Every structure is written in C-alpha cells, then in structure tokens.
Length: 515
Image (cartoon, rainbow, N blue to C red; front, top):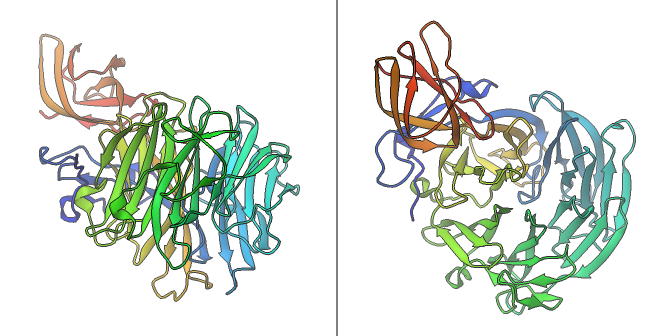
C-alpha cells in the first residue's frame, strides 16, 4: 500500500495566519491516496505560538519523550533553555499556559547536568516529571501538587537511573510510574516516589546496544517497551525492537508471547521482536513514534536507505502478528531529508477514534499531520502549518492524549540556520503547536431537492462524521440527523449548506451546497 500526501505545488496555504484554527486552512488539490480523484476535502491548520524565543536547538530534545500535558489547571511543558559546552549545566524550565497555549509563564526553573524532563499528569492534575543527572548518576522524580504551584515540588531519587536517553510513563490503574533509561535500567515507582523495583532490563548485544527507549500502555494494562539500538562504537543507529509485559514490568515477553529471561539482549542477536528489517542494519534506523491503541501496536520508524523510508508498522497486541507495513507514510512527500522524528496522538479512551501522526514535510521545514480513521490501515493528510521555517523543525513531541477540548498539542524547536552547535546560546526557538482534532469532511457528490425533501449523496469521507444538519438562507438550521453516505431528509425549504459533527463532538465548518 502506498499513501499520498499532496505535492508542494498541489495545495494552497491560506494567506493569513491567526491563532484561531479556521484562519490557517490549506486546500489539498492532489489526491491523498494514490490514483484517487483530483480534489479532496481541505486540510485544517496548525496554530503556533512561541514558548521561548531564546533557547538552544536542543530545547525540546528528546522527541520520543512526552514533554507536554494538559490538565484542568492548564497546559504544561518542559524544555531546555541554556547549556554549557560540556552539557553539565543545563537551565531547564517547567512552563504553564492558562490560555490554551497562546502564552506561557515559568513555574519552575533549575540548572543541572540533564536534558528536558519527561512529563506526566494524572487525572487529579498532579504533575510528575523526571530527569537524569549526568554528574551523580541518579535520576530524579518531581511531583507537583496541581493546587500548589507556589510551593516547591517533592523530589525523589532513582538510584542509578541517569542516562542520556530515557522515557517516563504513568500507569494510573496500577498507581505507578515507569522509568526506562538507556543504561539498561528499568525503574517502577509508586506515585509517592518510592522505588518498587529497579532491574537491569536489557543487556548489550554483540552488534549493538540500547540507545533510545520508548514505553506505551495498552487499554488492557499491557506494558510495551521498544527501543532503537546503536553501534557500540561509532555513530550508527542500527535496528528497532519491542517487547511487552502483562504485569506492570514484573515479567517480559516477545510480542508473540514467548517468555523472556532478564536481562534481554538488546540487538538482533537477542530474543526480542525485531521491528526493522535486516536490510537496514547498515544505515541509520531510528524509532520515531510508538503507541498502543485499540488492541494494536503502532510504530513509525525512519531508515536512511536510498531512497529513505519512513515506515508505518502495525502489530496485533495479543498475537504479536505484524499486520501492516506502509512505505512511505508521506509517500508523495518523499524527500531527500525525511524527518527522523514525529509523534502519535489520539483519544485512546474512545474506541475506534482517529489516530494522528505529527511530523514534517518540505525538507523538515513545515509541520504536518496525518490521520487514520481505521486504526492505521489507511492514512490521509489532515493538517499543515502555513509557516515555512527557514532551516529545520527539530525534535517534535506531542501529548499522547488529546486535550479535553479535542486538540493535539505539542512542542518542537525551530533551529537557527547559523547555529554552529545545537547547545550554543540563541540557537533555537521553542514553539508550542495546537491542532483541532476530530474534524470531519465529506464531499457532496449529488444533491437534489423537491417535494419538501432533500436528497444528498456523499463520498471522500475524512474524519469520523457522526451527525449532519442542514442550513438555510435565513440562518436557521435543521435538527441533527445521523450521518450516512446516502440521505433523504425532510426539509420545508431548499437547504443552502450542511454541517457535520464528529464522534468527538467537534463541529466542522459549514459547507456550501451548490445551486
């Protein structure tokens, strides 16, 4: 299967960009799937605001960590502002927005030998963020009460948890957190900061070692871990692997269910499930995004082959069967410099809801979002930013869950072209982005009106339309009706437009009915 995202000359970006999502709309003229008809429903826009105009290019590193969350107390984000040459004095911030991401204020600012803390939030709004300390070899978990932002957070030590790459995951049903670091350690912590277990999960292989760890949690409580390996010497990301745990990290299995003994050899000589292909061992191969949703395990990884690939892969969570592989997910946007990072977002509490993937197009200079309404089987262009960044969009990360008002939120760094290193002062601008999720589109194929009834026929469905209403010339509207591809609705007057409402209760803009 080969998926299309329209070429640069085939869509128009709205001339004006404002904060409201309706203002930044691009029109997709070419097909979103290969061989489809020429005109497709329009893309929505990407709302942008600057979180920090004077940061470093490593400001939002690492992309696979969740560094943005939304609670009833606001939107929170972590990033690095400044660094020294040895990377032992990084000034990092926890920021808060109470206006939906238009502006941010600093909640906490500290300086350590660290990278940007990974961030989680529970249903009560408690914030948990964790960072390593490269000098003392430990990691540190912070807990901040949602009603006490003026107070200092509680801080707990994770002995031996420091490593350059890491990830944090909240398991609220089990009331615990997981910390997985690239020194092969795996910590399980109670929400009060007590370390429940601290194990060596992985071991170096003969060919490669653990480099970038990922974690995700299935709806049934199954914990999944995945990682990118790297050569033990030299600079090459070699392969991608995954395992699962049915009991909160106590025991581990290959994706197919075979029991594994600890520590698990990290490379392809070990027993884990290999995601990437043998033919990609000799080029950079990097896991960008990882999510469990609707009983499936979703992954996007990048391989620096010729031409480069940005694979989407889906596995069944129970059987471990590899069900889908798509090369390349941005097919018609295939470019010399494919993006090596990106992130999934969804409302996973709603079965069958849309899955989103945020990455870049136009040689990593423009933010773009794909969507899938069938759990990864097919993808289409959903959103694109009007702004074209001059050099590179770097280290994109999202909140895994949509906000309560149905938006995808995240951060990335706009790298300054003249920057000589990614850690020097003034080398990056940290951006916050927001995309209205849940929008749906349906192209009107046929329409007729007579004898008090409106007949409508639709095709090219995008999103998940659940209801429809008709609009009339005097500004009034009909009641909401269940949406289907063929509709025969009572209408005392000829309708002038129709409007859709999605499964996430999001209203799409009214669409005109041609005369």
